[in-house]
Image (cartoon, rainbow, N blue to C red; front, side, top):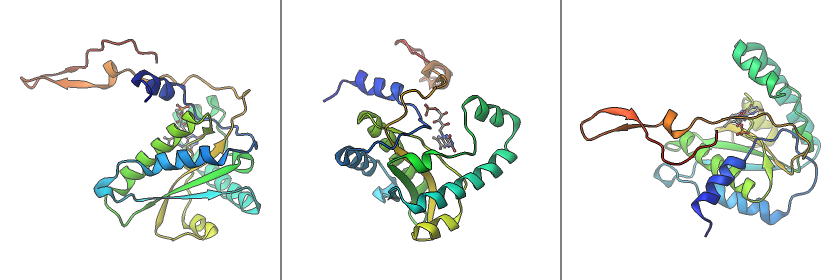
Length: 208
Ligand SMILES: Cc1cc2nc3c(=O)[nH]c(=O)nc-3n(C[C@H](O)[C@H](O)[C@H](O)COP(=O)(O)O)c2cc1C
């Protein structure tokens, strides 16, 4: 059993990676991460997620075209602060990782099931953290794709597309911008027995 500190360290270490190499992934690593995804809590245990693993092949080119078209439009409509974030994080509509990554994982939510949206994202969180534990890299990428994407993959049109994750080994030379996190002192409030709200008092060091 890992120490709680090790789990925190794993969460601190995990980064979104936008350059994934074509190096193959050991099947058992991927399968363990998928098992972690299936272990997420879900409303009424409905497990409303559906994962589709897309191998490299001609379909990838069609996916890339769809993503790039969606992102060109998304970037065009984004407010200035978001465009600034994109440019400082080298996020452009060019989605080379859709071609390179040994696995492209499409995640859908079954919108006919209760609490589907909340539950699907808990599953994605389990998945990306488990990938990190396996020494694999991923990007949680959420292009605005519509049901033409379901049609392209041949999946149920009522599944709601949520995320497309390239999975594999990252390029060790990828430049990663710092992405500081707010501390519990900044983001957590406590309501005491008298009903007074005050910031959480931190006792442990926190590295942004
Ligand atoms: C719901 C969600 C949607 C995201 N969508 C995109 C995206 O469309 N494109 C992208 O490059 N990164 C996307 N990301 C990755 C975030 O930019 C990234 O998680 C954030 O900057 C924090 O960096 P880190 O993952 O390295 O900690 C998304 C992340 C989440 C959780």
